[in-house]
Length: 183
Image 1 (cartoon, helix red, strand yellow):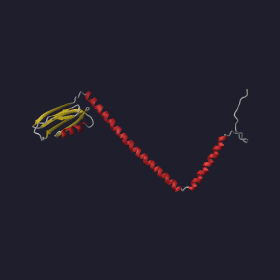
Image 2 (cartoon, helix red, strand yellow):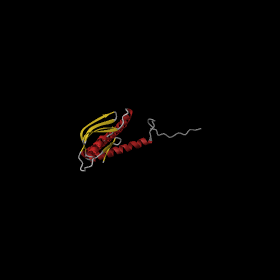
Image 3 (tube, rainbow, N blue to C red):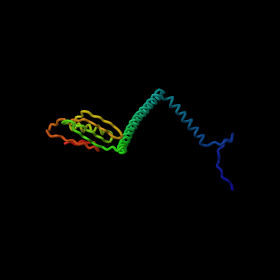
Image 4 (spheres, rainbow, N blue to C red):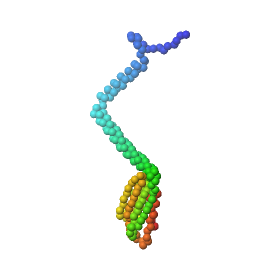
């Protein structure tokens, strides 16, 4: 049986194998190099450098804007994740320590009341409470806020402002949703 072999291209002088694509590739590179040199000689070098600088500056500006956006997104996601984790921990802490949400009110004098409120420590809850009190015409005389074991402990001396109506206002606070109801 005779084995078929590929015909190899050898240089006659050295008997080394030469690829037929090797010569073609060399000619192509030489042609490309000569055209590049010709283009460089025609073009103004200052223009080339100026265009390169402008392009690099645009890229740097884009990198900077994207990095600012990334930092902003990271800060937002960290705040959100941290807040949610804190709120979850607050609820668990209250349950672990046996703390129950509650509201106690005692009359001090006339239209002055002492209020003790225990609610879950959640973001924005205290500010909502203060808004609700203000909207219903309740003036805070003295307020103390303490956070412990996943809960807000709010003690306050409040005074109901004189309403335009002669009716007495009665206010209720629900500890679960931090909402005052007045009528």
